[in-house]
Length: 296
Length: 145
Picture 1 (cartoon, rainbow over the protein chains, first blue to last red):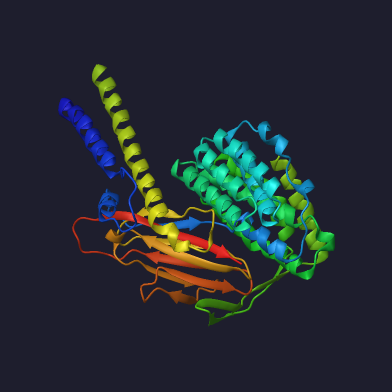
Picture 2 (cartoon, chains in turn blue, purple):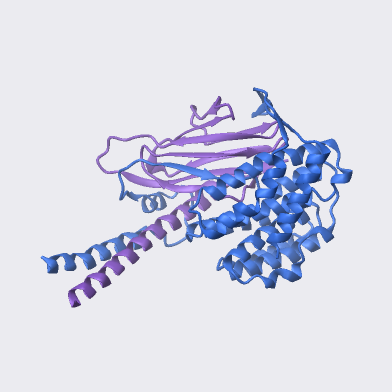
């Protein structure tokens, strides 16, 4: 009986390997290629239905664009020093600072500081390589960025595409925790940069900072959606001063009204977020403390 | 003792095969999304989050996140044809349905006046078929100003 059971293992394993090897497309195909569709689909190994919950957050690039629209200025002195990138030796620290440098790169790109963008892209490449996802930013991508250094739209597209690929690769490699750390630290850094000129901030920038309370909730949900590793727990704990500071942001409820403009849905109304100058100062101080801890 | 060692060896081999099998499904989903889905965001800057999963008939997927005021967004759902026509709807923070793809659209374009959280629900249609096929489903986000 035992012998029968033993002999089934290699058969089953071999069968699974054959199935697995059959599934991978061999070469480039187009979206309408029926061969690709046949190869991509396979009989499911499970029958139980699931509800997959995705967690995500607005990116530093989106936040940077909003901040720029308020008339805020940019100073390279606020960025994390590119010289410090070699200081991070654990994968958690590398992921955290990949997020930080990624946000710096996004800000530099949005504010059309192209030379700085290219420098930070090199830094990001180094950290990505250390994390084992370096193939995402290869020489071809760097050459494209260099060739398009005066075209902001192209640079934005290249940077966003690279971070999408890194996020995808980390998740596909089973390193969701690192992907979540990257998103969380990127958010902290983008908020840090947004709050640097708070004393001169106009009402629009103040509103944009107050609204980040919602993004903070996205980030916390994202961190909480994965298995609670010590590193994820440490990140949640380190964000607590920011959570406390945002508690004083006020929310006024209002219903949405839906209309259409040029084929797009427009959601008018909706909740409004406001914060006093004191609250904004507290947020700024808390973000500074947390950010400085993350880059240590 | 030697039987136990052989069993263990084969168990490790089987686990390796299962892991390889899962990784291949994930790699397929990545390849499918890149080839067939990302072009839907043409003209928009893709959000950096990767939201794809291998689903079967009857499965659901949900994405909830914050959309910033004054930004133009496109949210697209892309699924493998083997799954049939997936349903896709957008709800606001008060759970009011704002939009659904009842006409078969694969994406929705919108803008919010005030920053707020929205939820997207995707459902793969059920089937009576005896054999369940699985396929990749991706929710993609793009923005522009």
